[in-house]
Image 1: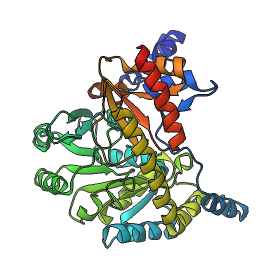
Image 2: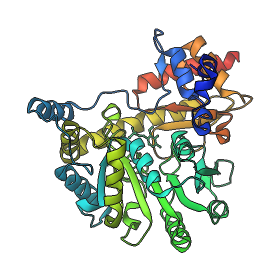
Image 3: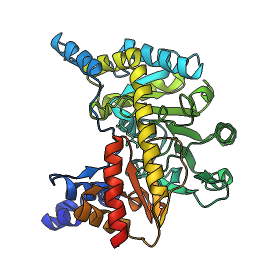
Length: 401
Ligand SMILES: Cc1ncc(COP(=O)(O)O)c(C=O)c1O
């Protein structure tokens, strides 16, 4: 149901809802997906999630905890063994010296974005991010009454691949700017902020007292031979305004569990803990138990699923590169191909028609802001066979349209 449909039910009641909420447009990805759900023989590459369920050993950990009666409220910051395991996991990955006091367990990466922004952003404050971008990243600050500016990632430069002009990012910041929110590796483009740019950004943010909030939920999904993307975690110190958001959703195939975490200076995790109480209280205990097992025993799964996505990515890149009218900027992270189709500006209609004609479900680029116009996103966290199937359909469709 659209916002206009709600408004006609009872305009008086509807007008009582805050304008920023009424202004939110329903997700265009959902618009395509709802058209396709329930249809037979659809290849759905519209959402950002792996096609396989969470590994059995992680599911079993949750079932064992439930069977043992783990059904009670938990601490707002998360259970101690999971905070401990998360600090240990990051110290191993980034050679840091984090303690459990640097970690808050959240109900998903999304909840982590909400809580970190609630902590630092007041109505009228200004936030800067890049675009195209996952729509929730601009919607949440707007719901909180903040102003949002986006700085475009560009794929038309000489270097190839997506680039961010850091000076343009700095120029977008003003006296009211409280937060630079970066999603790296990036959804939908697969762009990663290089380590030297991160260092420059930290210097700029330090100087101006601006918070850096880094959404790193795709940190482990990199295809350049590294084990993780350049991260803001090692740049965080007790004196720096940096918070990093992460999630179990993508690397451990746990999207439906809603488990994530925030890494922050120990001086402020107590404040975040208070906000957790008002948002969700805490993640369920049995889900946190599964998180501990995912961290302790899940490394082989993280690596093997990344290798699987790398194979599907290779097929997808090869197929798209051989299609006329397709321009695919290089990207070495996350699990999306974000490509342009020459001659197509309305990608929402394109995605709907592709679905109706060929049963291929892709996400329209406009869903990621006006900067995404003309692009289409395909999630490749699926089998190579599925990628071939989707590409066969796209090829047929492009030949006709
Ligand atoms: C950039 C980005 N951040 C956060 C999330 C949310 O992840 P979670 O499932 O942990 O809420 C997503 C999910 O698609 C995402 O793409």
